Image 1 (cartoon, rainbow, N blue to C red):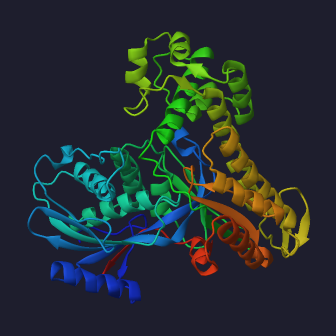
Image 2: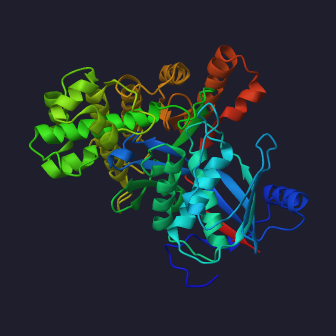
Image 3: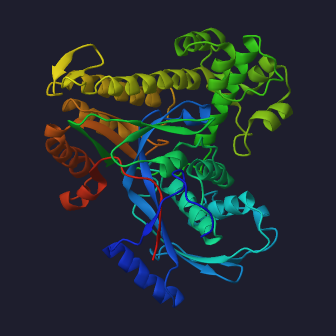
Length: 488
């Protein structure tokens, strides 16, 4: 590869000796009658706190998982793309690379659900539009993923990111981490969802043993030390939801945009101002989060706003509203919940700041003492239950807000939360919602009992699974590193 590798470049390392790599390598040879040129690995993520606020411009606090998307790739001299999955239930896909490939339309199936390979094409399309090359190398991809699909653990974003990274590397590019994270966030929107960039940012900027406080414009990731006497447990609700298959996700995005526009206009900001997000309104008005919460209650008092209501406030017609603010799959909507969505966003943004501050205030000082976020001082962190409780209360409040204000929870998620409360363990849905997983902050000495209880009360009693199968849906996790490139 040409060029110098900076500390901000995606790391390149020797291919690890593992059973998974060996299995993928053997299958690659069966499918393509040759060996891979290189491998790319991109992790999934669990968002600890800060849900549905990245696309509003607010910081989030995720960490990378051990589960990942792994691509075995070979560079071809001919302009063709071959996409296969090691799981045979996912069909193969081949196509030529033409001069107008950047104009490729990525279409869903007849039910509006994306084909699995559409996420791969999103990454490739983004890469092709990023660089201007006369000659493009073709690729063969064999993909292996162990992130549960539709789980809220960012399997789709990891697939987009892995495909983009692998395709760029096949063109002799050494990507910059922040640059490719932003590129992949944009690329995934080709599949139809208006995400904010958290998933792609943590995929590339994650570091082992540390969660990340991620800010946007400019993209940056700062390490957050998590409590050493607690673990995070991830449990699947067994309810799956593909956010690109419905308009539920995009509906929340545009409701936040409309709320931002109305608050801005009613506070004297010109309608012509290019403000799009709730964070941009706050910055423009120079208000605190607490003050923005009061403005939401002042300017958005109604439980429901019709399309006509919004047009009247903004002094536009319905066609202008469709063209300026709505996405193709939300133009048929006639009613919007603006107050509820904006309240969640501003209150959740405040919870992220409080969570980060609580973590930073629970660091050992030079005398071997720990200052907890409520001012208590304990020796060597042995009595940090109060800090864990503060963090846990923030996570529980986040779930309640997602359930009642954002309306993106699910009965199965709520049941896990209720069972957790019985054990005095705090948890919340993680990811887009409507199914997927919860993430729980659990003291280490409670983790085994907590997992056993969830298996018995949720998976066995409620979902009617046997214990051995139930164990695959719940795991303890610690922060993992971000994307990697492996070469021989």
